[in-house]
Amino acid sequence: MVAWTPRTVLFGAALAFSFVVSGAPWSMVEVAWAQEQTLFMAFTDADGAPVSDMTPEEIIIQWDEMPSEVRRIEPINWPARVTVFVDNATESQTVLPDMREGLRLFLEALPADIEVAIATIAGRPQFRVEHTTDRGALADAVGALASEGGAATFFDALYEEAERLDDDDDREYLSVIVMVAVAGSEGSGQARGQNLERMMDRLYDNAAVVHTLLLPSPVSGVTGTQGRPQTRWGTDIAAATRGTFADLNIATDYRTRLPELVNDISRRHRLTSHQFRVTYRPPEEASDQPRVQVGSARPGITVWPTDNGNIP
Image (cartoon, rainbow, N blue to C red):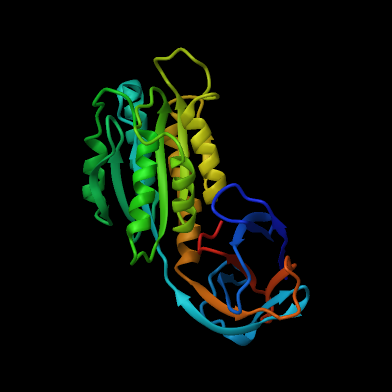
């Protein structure tokens, strides 16, 4: 049985719940209890393979150890869709060959059915190729990446992508955003006021996961990325979206760390393509801050519950 308990969160909700499955924590947001509640749930067998034939009778949801009524379950097929933003501003010029090679290996290892887009962030975010499974077109876009000078727009790229996701009313995919950047000069115009909170809310609400690979600026003479705005944004966003932040040491780390992301993306792709939206009615006698447990009546099943379909 999987359990979670209330705790405070920074962005967008009054309460959150921390799940623990196989030692991996993540969060679930509920603003207020209603007669019907919704969870996203994926199920895997003893070999880690998705289970797609679950029935309502096999799903257990308890509040304060009292059973909830599972009203209906809906199969959800959300394949991963990857958006890669590449820093091609002045300070990344000398490391672009390593970025290109890392991206080549990344695309080579990624499952062929996952759509990918390539964009750059020098001056302003620009898409070089829209989301496609055409690996030839993607390879051409990566091979053509070149420095365009000026400052990078790391924040603007994420902000604009979050707005695009929020505007996509027909979204049926797990958005995976990969930031390939250096901790250099930042020229974003949106990095002000409440825009960080707005962006975080948009990314979370739309089940986005953000991975950032950040290298110290090769021209700044500064060791490490601590104190840079990209580091602060990258770490905060990784925590909020169940993603990762990698503080790279040398440029060749792009060649190893980018393909290493494929294992995580592929696993999520497999699970989010075989999950359920579960609608249930909690017991009336439950407390205002209940202890909620989730499980399966079928032996040998691992349950992956989330509030938004973004499986960690």
